[in-house]
Length: 263
Image (cartoon, rainbow, N blue to C red; front, side, top):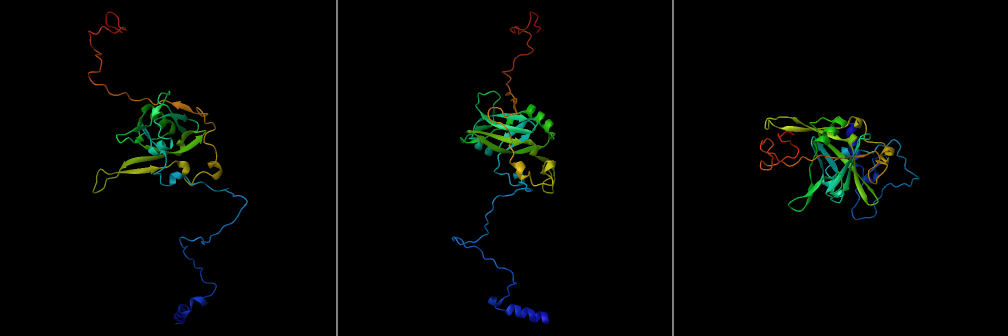
């Protein structure tokens, strides 16, 4: 009974007569006004000790420059290509010690250049798949990646004196594995399972101090500790008419054969 009386008294109390211990009321800022109040303080410096920079891999990667690597295939997304002014050819540089890869723009005629983009029928620049079984076999072995997985690595754009390069930290690569997950409606359904590096567990990212460290020490030509990688291209298939008659006994025009047709 006393509780009902108390509730009635509180409900009947005019808003102007409420005590100072009542919760503070907040009003929604009004748009188109310069009188929005907020807390602002001047400090001499910021102390980021103990803070971690949250990895961008933990957020949506829809608009992030990246490279996707499968066994036998390498493809850079269109975001990376546009950041490089839509150049058509690059050189791929590797640092085995630091587990880093660089994409460096170059001319088509330069040694070890590979084509990473092309122009489609609508005259738009699009990504081009780079075929390289030798390169990916060595890379998967060096990084201890499973050959059945799909690897994705986000890139960091570096600029210096008008030149641009993309750096990919392979130690922060994400792996995706397609596994069978049949359902009643689709017995052939497959599910894409993501895997993250073990050293990501228990942290949000690198410390603020570590995030400010240089990715590479030099920039011009081939950066220190990197080597150029040649990705062998699979030659186009020849038609039957273009294939030589390897077993033609009457073919005596080969200068490397003796009179008896022996090589």
